[in-house]
Image 1: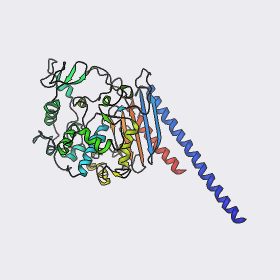
Image 2: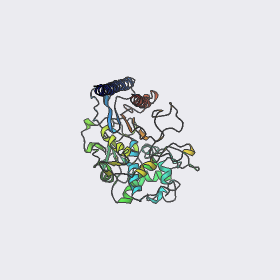
Image 3: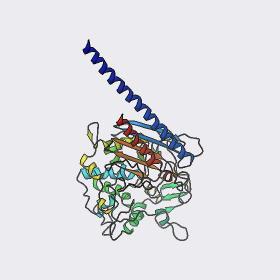
Length: 425
């Protein structure tokens, strides 16, 4: 009898503690959700962005998955979790870097090789002599960006030869906007030439630059004989079932599913909706390695979960674990550069005013931000993925409250605080 009493007592003790922990976890999660709701809704009221989607997964399972606000400030069309956002510079990682990681695995690129080994027409320009490692880590001293849309105009306001035209023709077949058409060879004749001639610092130093990433589609094509979009679909997107991860999304999806970005008043002079926001990318017909990808939160998560899972999903290896470790590691920390290869990393010394992520993000964590108000961050130490999608540039890019309010790092820190609490329970 005494033996049965002891067993029953132990069972009740175990049940009460486990049940209590579950109740506490549910309560803590509810508080986390309420706190995130409060932060995002407050930011919307202050016009940091019209709407947003927040996705968090922990140990491979969704923890938070919520939509907020509307597509625009007219409050007509609400945001749904399935809505498709312009991912902006997340393209640098989710397209360019992943493609280069695959080529690295296949022995087709070498990080210490100069860019001019893989891109035609760069010659021995200073830009062409920057190595892939330096370019990916933004350590080559490459100019930050080029305002291509301004370079195409003469002093009298007319477009330069072989650039843009106000009318459609065989030479100008690509419609950028109403009354604006792109020359069919603009990339070869103009973009590459401007990049080749762009200044490079004499002493390589950390300068965040997108110029190299415009050339990645050509690198992929030169080395594989396959165009950039097809290579990405064949090696990643199709088998990972990321149906909304796509360049030029109106080719596949109704405009209603796509969240608008900016009302352009200086180049295309129309609302930007369903076309890439980045001016350089639209001058590559929407397909570049710098910007151009669109997608919804759940599909974005599939790519980053693959990285978090050592490059494997359902028994298929997409990228070698050693390659992920290499590319997501800080490359030039001794030169005060936090960056990995293509991936962003936490600041070497945390500064709340400058950081896009939580103070608690581990040194092994990595991700990237996007100009339109997007962010993805992965933390292997916590088995955590954080995704924030928004169109903070609507109606124009002067809206910077997302930074002033520290919306994304504040939410990110709340998630770490939550994980700390449930671990204690």
